[in-house]
Image (cartoon, rainbow, N blue to C red; front, side, top):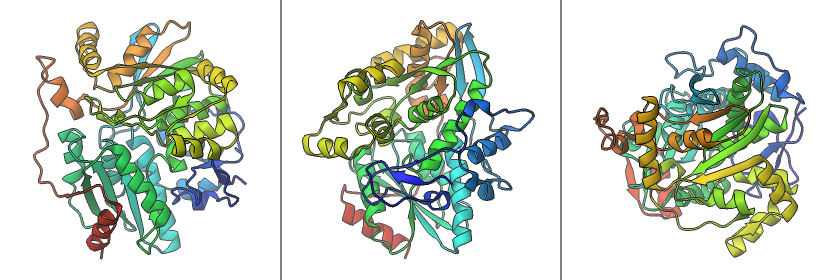
Length: 442
C-alpha cells in the first residue's frame, strides 16, 4: 500500500483516496508517495491502448488504490478529440510535443481533466460538496474551471493577479458564468494569489471540505508523469526534455519519471525575466525577487510551489530549507547536491525582447507559430548539443497569446473572446477574499 507523507515531516500520512482531495499537509508541506508499487515506469507498454487507457494503467501502476476511481471513468471528458499528445519534428535532433489540444488550449488540461473527474467521484463517494480554491498565473485557472464546471459535487474559486494575465486567458476564466464558479482578480502578483490560496487551504475558514487543484495536489504530478511515460515510448533512445518553467510542476514530473526509470537524460528549464529557477539551478540557492510582468505571464512566478518536492528529494526533508527561506528570503542546497542538480538540469533566461525575437525567427525558420512560453523551450532544445534527441514541450496554443504574436507576424491576427465576463476585483487581503467567497456561496 502506498502512503503519502508531507515534505516537511508531519507524522500523519494519507492514503490515495485521501490525497485526491488534499491540499497542503498540516505543516504546510506537500504530499509525496513513500513507495511506488512499480519500481520502473519504463516497463509499461502502450500496446494497443488508447492514450486515455494508457494513462489509467500509469495511475494504477503508481498506486493500485487508484484503480477503483479510474477504471470505468472518463478521465478526459473535455477533449473533443483524442488527448494523445502531438509530436512535430523540427530537425533530426529536435521534436516538439504539443500539449495544447485540450479544452483550454493548455498543457494544464492533461492533469486537471483527470483530477477533476476523480475528485468528483471521490466526493460523490463521501456524499460531500467540495470547494476548490486555485491560484493561477494564467492557464491553471481556466483548466481547473473546465475540469469541474459540470461537476455535481464541486464549487470552484479561482484567484488571478489583476491585469497580469493576457486578456484571452482572463476571459477563458471569467466568461464561464455558472453558480459553482467564482473568479476573483486580486490586486497583486501571482505569488500573492498563491499565498492566499495556500493560507485558505490550510486554515479552512469555510466550514466545508476545501480542495486544491493547483500543482501542490499529487494527482497533478501523476497526470503529467503520464505524458512523459508516453513520450519516452515514442523513441528508441533516451531523450532530453526542454520545458518552459514557472511553478516547476511540469519539470518535477519529468524528474519524478526519470527517477522511476524513464530514459530521460537532461531536463532543460527555460525561464523569463522572473528567472528564480535559472538562478536556483545554477547556484542551488532559492532567492525570490519581485515578480515582474512579462509577455510570457504563466512564468511570472518567484516562489515555485512544486520545487518543494525536489528540495525534499535532494535534502530528505524540506522543513529546514523552507524555514530558512521564510526567515532570510533565501535558502541554499549543499555543495554536493548542487553538483547533482547541475548534472540533471540546465536553464536559460529569455527576456521579453528575446521571446519576441524567437517568435519571429522560429516562424521564419520552420513556418510555425509558437506561443511566448513554448518558444523558450524550443530554442533551448534547438541549441542543445547532446547526442540524444531533445523534445521541447509546447505548453499553450499561440491563439492564447495572439495579442503578443499578431504585431510580430504579418500573417497572424489577434484572437478575441467576446463573451460576457463576470468576476470580482478585490484587494490583496485574505480576510476580504475569504468573506467574499463565503457570501458568494452562501
